[in-house]
Image (cartoon, rainbow, N blue to C red; front, top):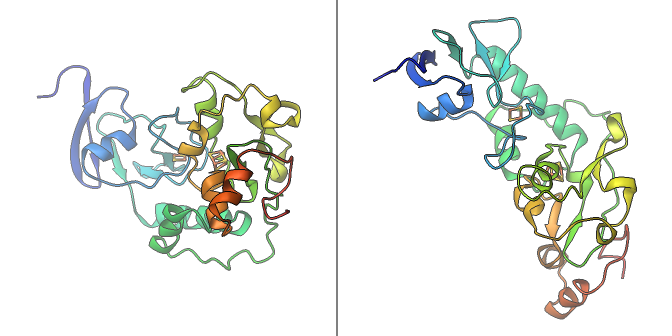
Length: 237
Ligand code: SF4
Ligand code: FES
């Protein structure tokens, strides 16, 4: 039974009543409608960065990111019309052109779901970073980073209050980094692993997993977790 703090709207033709302040993403979830997300994670504060979750609200000029846009009473939301599909497809094609998504199965599934053309931007400059191996616990491969900001947020106010991660460089070269690009062992990082846990692409990975992918033996993996070499791959023996 709706109360005075509830609002009712329509999502894909389905009437939904939600608490005032609920986001479109939350209302859609309540209605059993799936909206794709990349930068959003339930454990972190939504910032509306990637725009994959855009929806059409009342046919407005601008599409609204469902993870941050609040529901409006009596509005009509379409989560997958032609405009929305075109927008999501283009976002995916641009991401794919600049980031190594080979270990991002959820994004790959979106690529296929939206029939994104992996060759659409053949001349795009891809992000090309050396793997950073600067601590005993995990590696960072920012060639695979979609700049979703999740790792920075769990490291900060959303969970750990450690503030070891921030953004470095600018524009196309923007990357997640430590302050002044110091090594992780010199940073305030306490190696809680939460950043690795929320990373959607494999850009952050435990050394055990990375070592197994590289075909290292159990002993080699054990050795790799006891040493760290700044900005070098485990391949560089
Ligand atoms: S390293 Fe992972 S979690 Fe952090 S911004 Fe990049 S993709 Fe997101
Ligand atoms: S998931 Fe909403 S903007 Fe990224």
